[in-house]
Image (cartoon, rainbow, N blue to C red):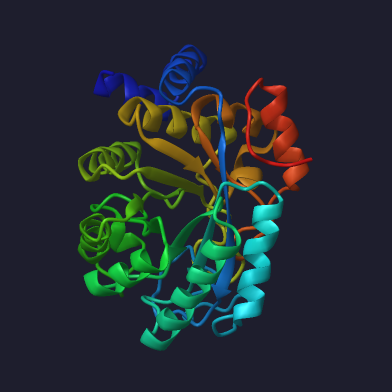
Length: 309
């Protein structure tokens, strides 16, 4: 797809709907009617030393986000069991901070082994920060199938997002995930104030990185963060971003995650037409929809998922 057309879609200079139909054709050509679902557990929350301007869990901002250390093994197992019983395809352990502590990694590896034994059909993922190659290999050997680590945004815009973390460190972590033999889930968040050109820059970086799954978040402004008043997105702009990503990454899983309900509102019914995966249930610090609502939306579109009634 011509770059100027993609930019015009993002700026709203040309109608979106004919291109959304072409994006739907690509999605169905490469992924069929199936919508993969994933769910997460906020396994360790708050007190993050980084200063990401959108994040409710940063220790730099005064938000109402919960703060707690790594959940107990029983709590983590119950969360995984709930996901498995609901028919969710993937389940991820997510922790706050730049990276998980070594003793926490050891505990979590044991939980992963336990879940793999109890629920072998549930694919396990984790998002634990900037781990070393050897730490990632520990997780793989425990039974983890996929590791998530976002770039967040275009490299040229990243200094506007965080001064405490380097974008290059994020990119190198993503490369280590692939080196460790894990499936890579890597994307970011839109609506931070990035330009349309930077949206394309970010998409082109993802093409270069070639992750297996691209999680797409849309900013849900959190009171107390520097971006609490940000209003850069509209439902149509969100759809345009998804269409552009599908054109740039026709064979890559595109997974819509946080901010879906807040930003897309009544237009979220169009999401499965373009994207083949959804995060369902609650997010890290904001609430999601009922699983039954997402299941019905998928069925009404003529698609299928593993979600149970």
